[in-house]
Length: 160
Image 1 (tube, one colour):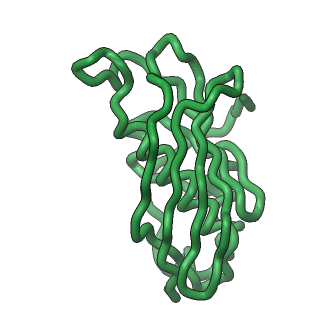
Image 2: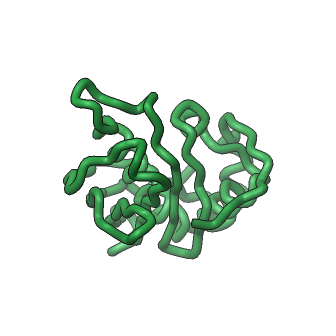
């Protein structure tokens, strides 16, 4: 996984500033640290590490603070990582003045994630993006490339 010496800030980007950027410029700002990551990223400790148009990677190293009662990482972490990488992948294809929001997503948890799993990577890739609806798929893998979880999303595209 790429290591980043990016100085992170957390917060939100104003709607006015977002309207001035294409979706790709917005997500590039998240990756390079010129824009703040959302506060959920700060809470959970994930990072947006890669972007090309239609593809986004989010990374995290799960630890003991993410455990469910069974002693494995809570599925909500996988859901958040997949929602983030898939939604941002769609966002990365949008023109200035256009935004998106998740309408629905589905995930499947394939293998348990534990702190011993080590760093994981969630990669979202756009399947289709029109004027009103975008769809994407996402995969969470470990450092050996084993599939841990996967999902799909449908996002609503709208003018800011």
